[in-house]
Length: 118
Image 1 (cartoon, rainbow, N blue to C red):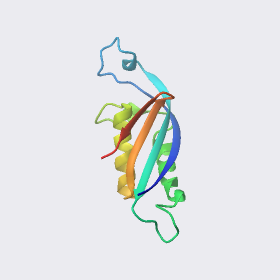
Image 2: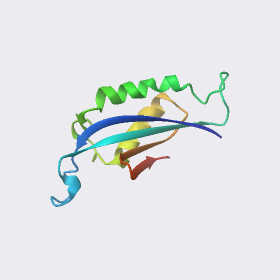
Image 3: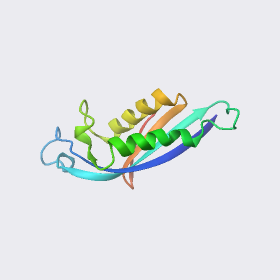
Image 4: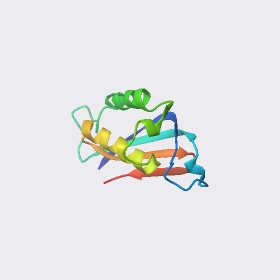
């Protein structure tokens, strides 16, 4: 199996307001997010790629346009804006455009990661 990964960054605020009021994540706060998309394939295309990294510019545009310096609760309204739910959101977006998508990881801090991998 061949695997490639590419990393993207954005800054945003959010609030997990369904949590108890004394929980630190219930307060309005922000993160410098890192999103890593992983694509995989049994074989390479004629160019020797799982997929050309340039194709992933569409994900950068999506992140920059809809997520960077935004309040995530205004964007993702149907579920809490946890790192786990963000990973699933970005996975679904990528999978619909890049069938080779195998997983997406999201980091909120240098020491924490959430991953969605079906």
